[in-house]
Image 1 (cartoon, helix red, strand yellow):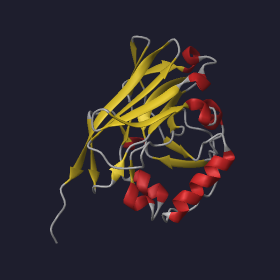
Image 2: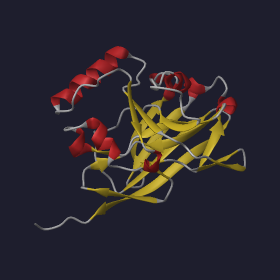
Image 3: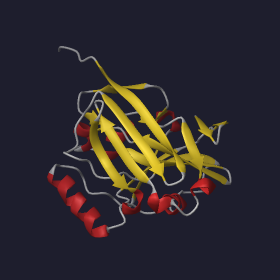
Length: 218
């Protein structure tokens, strides 16, 4: 994968993709969300936060993704790219199959590509402004879908440091560190646009189309 950082292009060869769920700072709100999902048939997480590891091949930076089935949707997230002793920040979408989510959460994420923007910041550039970062997303053009602040979630770098690797951490990996609430309910769309912004920082934007593989008549 590649990121344009400070006007220079950086190339990365991540060895793993980590998606971190239930990363909210307010534990009572997280518990309430778990109860809501349980009512829809979604299994309770094995841990809070929940760390899910996937192959890096799921990372996508093309203008469109292909999915199976009509009920998939994106979620804007702060993404941290770790490369040796350096860390970079960008925005991504934890695209998920919502029908499969009610059966097996990890599988529901594994069957969808994870779009990531083409630009980013160095973690050093963010400095002490992490809690001032804002996440916003739109679907199908200009329909506002998410609009929230990073301070509702645990600190992204703290989450990355807490990943429970079984052995030595990979030299390079990508971590999705949590989303913000959806406006008007989770729903599919044919297009998704996410933006990560912060004071004194050039906004990072991710845009992609969602193409559904044609179904068969059986």
